Image 1 (tube, one colour):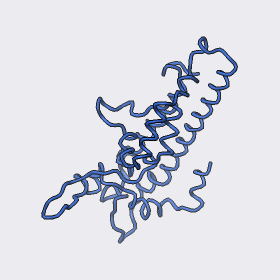
Image 2 (cartoon, rainbow, N blue to C red):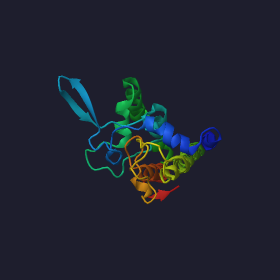
Image 3 (cartoon, rainbow, N blue to C red):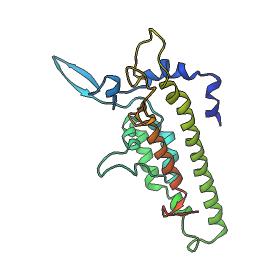
Image 4 (tube, one colour):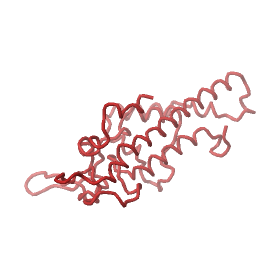
Length: 218
């Protein structure tokens, strides 16, 4: 997988300290010195504080399209009326991209057909459809597993190493003193989520799409 070759041209410390700060947002960044986000001056002393996501793959219509087409649902731990990260990320997409995802979600029933109980769809065609569907979801699970490995190499491990003398703290540095003794779950992604727990939850939700009625593995 191409993602696994990132190390060929990109050093983890360079990415974490010199590239990632420019991707950081102002949402949930209190540990980086932005407890209220950023103040946007509207002139004449008026303005407001805003907490906005930074750059994230979740804001890509293509990435979200994979979940929508495969019928993968996210946000299983969200409380009622709370937007999931994936739905909030759509607010950062061009309008036509958001509408496209909504249209596909309304029209696509691939998972519904593929995961029909065998008694209701015991045909060779259905067997091929289910096999193809499960293979596609399995590949997405593998992609997300490799993504966690990349995040560990390029974010988790560099975050635990002290900056060189004379280096200034930036938005890639969650605390003024580095992260040597911090738990991995305290690290915030550029999109404002608790990075590792969010990625694991997303992976679990992807895997659950391969279960019949979310209970019986197929």
